[in-house]
Length: 292
Length: 255
Ligand SMILES: Nc1ncnc2c1ncn2[C@@H]1O[C@H](COP(=O)(O)OP(=O)(O)OP(=O)(O)O)[C@@H](O)[C@H]1O
Ligand SMILES: [Mg+2]
Image 1: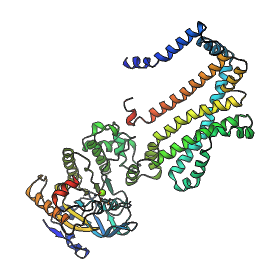
Image 2: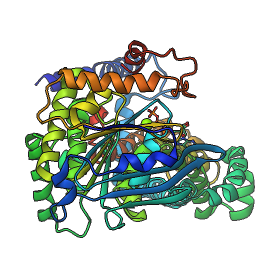
Image 3: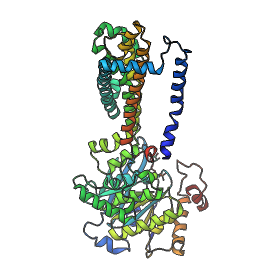
């Protein structure tokens, strides 16, 4: 387990030394995951600089979690990975650089209300596929998330957690090499959340795609990820390898220690109040409250 | 069974009113010149149906309504789509359309008569003008208010422009387009009644005005009732279409 605290770009490379979680990085199964390399990425909206000279390398098959204060640019970074945003400068390379390598799952399910569940999953497949084939694949993906029996329903009759599972099936049906998750569990109740976390972990272990999860919940990041990075002032301020064995026990001492460390950093001198939450008092308790 | 009983309930008051009306007319409490008895109106309808006059006039009116709706609605729909999808086109045409919209289309009647006489063109033009705006405005509004998050999802999942339009934008705009259509149907009949009453040599409105000259009150009332029936029929068709295409909508799920 290594922890690197970075004060600036000069030391950025330290964090990208090979991790101790070897196999997927060194010998990726062919086609399983895409390596991500981000070099000197900057992104501004008008005069507002969101990301400044950010460097990040994610080995194929890694489960990376991104944490940071609200408005620090987590979503922006994630959206550049699936080309929903173009970098202002710098380079973002996912896999061999082709389009459609990555799939994104949003905080909202974003299902098409006018298509049945199975057809919503088929949105994730390319249009060239014969109907019977794409239906079969969509049904497989629905089986994977445990919703095969709801294939013929309209999305509006599903519960929030079920909708999010359909969205996961849609994201996974094309066997993407990268799955980008933008707080996909933020709107769910605690129990459904834990179920969804195990579901995501299970499919990731099976399919070995590269996963990038943006979350407000440090405990969730530590429960799922191989590595947690913290974004601050438009760049990576903390890069933590989580070498704990899976399945991880919620509330174990190691997780607790790492969580305290990340939260401490979030509220230490380096943590300016974010522009979305001026005057936030430092301290883990407030963090919990503010993001609960 | 339960459904039948409930729908029968809706008929209690209308049927009651007709019975009271018939009774009052029979004992002479309502003068025939003011309001003929329901049986007299049915008899008038039978007479005109046998002579074929009724069908000819209904046919002509329905044809005018349909042609006007297709032309005005079609242009409104096309412009609504174009302006909904292209900011450039909207900037170019929308201000002018909004200006024209402030003119009540029935105020155009004298001008339209000057232009087209009492020809078919005059009536079709007025109907088309009348239905244009509700369809244009609601199509535009429907497209503009499509959930941008869904559009973004479509882009992220690699949909082509056509795919985005046909799978995300158009279905999302459809509820609003139907609101426009049903509103337009109301305007369509209203415009036609006015236009046919003022200047025509055929059609239901003409039939009513002609009957008025000969003091045939039963035919006048008959014409009014047929207009109501046609309006109801058009609305039912639109409702049925709406239900068939919006079956995904939570509001129609349990219907
Ligand atoms: N399209 C845009 N136009 C202008 N500013 C934007 C746009 N998208 C994001 N921003 C700004 O960029 C900053 C980072 O936004 P982003 O959504 O990436 O934050 P975040 O870290 O995901 O926050 P949260 O945790 O609240 O979701 C914010 O200040 C936001 O206002
Ligand atoms: Mg965000």
